Figure (cartoon, one colour):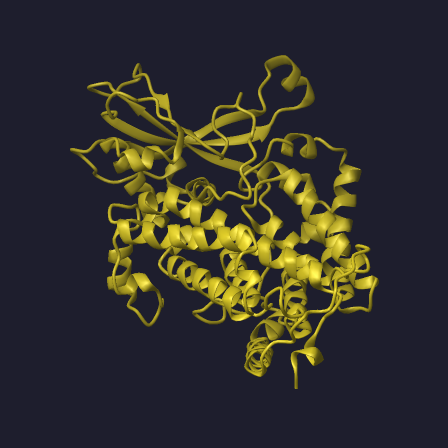
Amino acid sequence: MSLHDLAADNSWAARLVLQRGIAAVYVIAFLSGLAQFPALLGERGLLPVPRFVRIAGRRRSPSIFCWHYSDRFFRLLAAAGALIGVTVVAGLPQLGPPWLPAVGFLVMWAIYLSIVNVGQIFYAFGWESLLLEAGFFAAFLGSDSTAPPWPVIYCFRWLVFRLEFGAGMIKMRGDPCWRDFTCLYYHHETQPMPGPFSWYFHRLPKILHRVEVAANHFAQLIVPFGLFAPQPAASIAAAVVIVTQLWLVASGNFAWLNWLTIVLAFSAVDDGFLHLRHAPASSLGPVWWVGVVCAFTALVVVLSYWPTRNLVSRHQLMNAPFNRFHLVNAYGAFGSITRYRDEIVVEGTDADRIDASTSWLEYEFKGKPGTPIRRPRQYAPYHLRLDWLMWFAAMSSPERHPWFVAFLVRLLEGDPATLRLLARNPFPDRPPRYVRALLYRYRFTTWRERRRTGAWWSRELLGTYTLPLALYGLGGTAHARGGDR
C-alpha cells in the first residue's frame, strides 16, 4: 500500500483549514491559560494543582504536572504550546516532511492534555475534549508534500457527526421544551454568557424562536448524515453546519466551541465545491507514514465503540470522555434549558462595622451580567473560565463550589492575579474589610424599558448568597433564602 491509495485529492483546502484553524484555536487556548490558569489553579490558585495532584494521583489524571508543577513551569509549557501553534498557523511545519506537523500537533495535544487533566472544574467543558481530539486527529493529516489521507479526513467527519448528532439527540431525550419547540423562548436570556446581540435574539417574535428550534433539529439530527454522502451533498451539509454555527456565534459566547466546529466542518468541503484545483503531490510519502495513518485509523475505529453505544443509549451522556486521553469522546449541549437567570453579585465595603446604612461597592466581571446598564460583550472564542463558573454557582449553594469562598478570600487579600480576572475592582487602593455575595434574578429589559432607561437588564434581589466575610472571621457562608439554594 502507498499513500496514493489513501489520497483524498479533493481535500487540499480542507486540510489547510483544519491544520491552521485547529492550531489557531490551540493558540487561543494557551494564551487563555497564561492569563487565567495561575490565578485559578496555580500555586496560590482557587483550586491549587499541587493539592489536586496529591489527592488524585498520577494514574487517574495523566499530566506532566503530576511530576512537577510551578507557575513558572506552567507558563513555560503554555508559551511553548502557543509558539508551536503560531508556526502551524503560519504553515511552516507543513513545508517539511509529514512527520514534522505531526510532532507539532502531538506536542500541543500533550501539553494541553496535561493542563486539562489537572484543570478540575475550571477545565470541565466539552470543548476542552473537542480541542484535544481535534488536535490529535490533525497530527495525521500530513504535510504539503503529501496528499491528504482520506481515512483521516473521514475521521474528522465522524467527529463532526458525533458533535452535532450527539447534541441533537441529547436535546430530544432531555428537556421537553425541545420537543414542543419552546426552548428558545428562554435560552438567549438564560445561556451562560450572552453576547452583544443576545438581547435582540431574545426579543424576536415567538414564532421565530420556534423556527430556530426546528432549524436546530434539522441541522443536528438530519444534516450530519449528509457529511458522509457523495459530493456535492457532503459539502452542502458542511455549509449548513457552518451557517448554523455562525448563528450561534452571533447569539452568544461559547468559547471556541462554535469556531472550532466551523473549522472541523471543512473536512467535508470538496475542492471542486470551492472551485479550487491543486497539483498532485510531488511525493506520496514513505511507507512508514502509510502505516502510521492506518494505525491511527484503526485506533479511532476501536475507540468509537463507546461513543457510538452512547449515541443510541436511552441514558446518553453529554460531553463525556471515555478515556484519560480525551480521544473519540461523546458530545452534546443544552440537554436542559433554565427558565430564569440568577446571578451572583459580589460586593465589598471599607466600613469598620456592618449595619443597614453600610455602603457596598460592586465588583464587575468581564463577561457575566452585572450592572444592568452594561451591554453584554463578545469574548468568544476566548474563554472566561471564572465567569462561566459563576453561572453554575448561582444554581446551587456555595458549599457545592469550594472555589467560590477561596475567590472571596483573594478579594479580601487584594490578590493582583485574581483581580486581573475582573473587569472592575472598586477598591484600587486597598482591599475591602468585608465582602459578601448577593443573589439576583436577571431578565432582559423589554423594548419599552430599554428605550426609557437604556438598561439591557432588569434585576430583582432574591437574597444573600454568602454572609459578609472578613479575613479575621471566615466563619462560613450562608444560603440564600433560608438555605433552599
